[in-house]
Image (tube, rainbow, N blue to C red; front, side):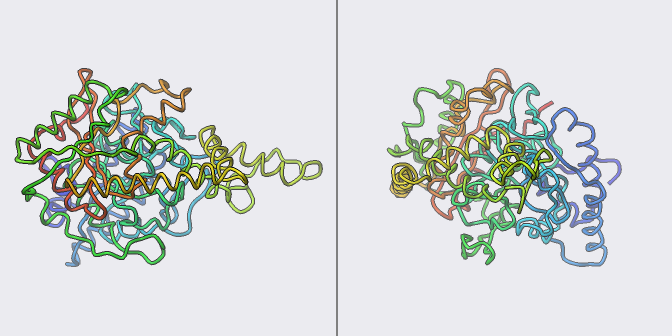
Length: 491
């Protein structure tokens, strides 16, 4: 496509590829060139296989040349978070424990992306085993926020968010266990969607907390997020938790404003600990909805204040169980220091896990092991499951009064790299607005709603009832269409 710029959004790219205005190889080469030029500073990717990328793009162009029908993501470069398996590609979870792992199979989502004719473009950096809110816990590198290279991109899907914000790829796959799509999306000024639990198959996803993990899209626009969700949602029999429900055409009605929209606002979200600039931007976003004809209603989520404490019992408990398999025998790093002549099997496990896991992963395994231990599981884990049920009931009651709930996505804009690394509790509180949606299993997204005086993005979180992604996306598109925050890009 000589003489003119390549399209930049996923919707534009796939339309241009299908029309023959641009080839998939051209879009892939543009993405690779952008990564080569900028990722030395941003560090969004842990691995890029140029030959594989161009191979995927060539296959798409060959299908078009043969007159075959192209998929909904034809020619679109997509970054893949480094805990979602792609056959033959590294899948390290940004951990020393899996530094040499190349899966012999692909995740269901990876297969669907290829079936949709997307072009997987590289493995995105992340907090080790998805445990973190800044991508500083990666054992490989620290990703920078494209808006300010001294600041964190959020986490754990920080590499995915940074790749989209920096313009390396218009789409990325992220995962969200307690806000790991929405928090980095807010920090990086993009759209990130956590679907309903079970809406997207987790087969081939390296598990952190199995009852909370969910795969979702990270994108430049709401339409791009809808396009990707369309491609990856749906039933998969290999995941017992995947919902066997029809997938709506999310794009078909995206630009139809919701008539009679009721936007819920929970006053408990606007309390001490919320940055004044973030509060102002979110409340101004609510006023935009009012100007569009929406009714703003007060809702109560009385148990949401317990969500962080509840999460940090349930998630580490499940992590302790899931990560027990990494012992250096069946899976994972094996220590070279072990002396089989003089040391026993327990020492062997200790060396393997001590060397293979980073500090944050060890911290959460210890927390989870304690809360599941004999005499404590009833006090902690089982009690947390009861509170989780109350949190879910709060949302059910709230959505009887409103269609979506508007709140901050994060309590502050992006913090500086290293600022919270020695304060785990302060780091955990970055997810105070996002965790409840994972507890309830409901869909929620973050989209840009302003900037701080220092030029950092601010995210608006919208959440909706179970399987209400179509409504959620339409509500988000209403706001996006009335504002221009999503059009701004870092220098």
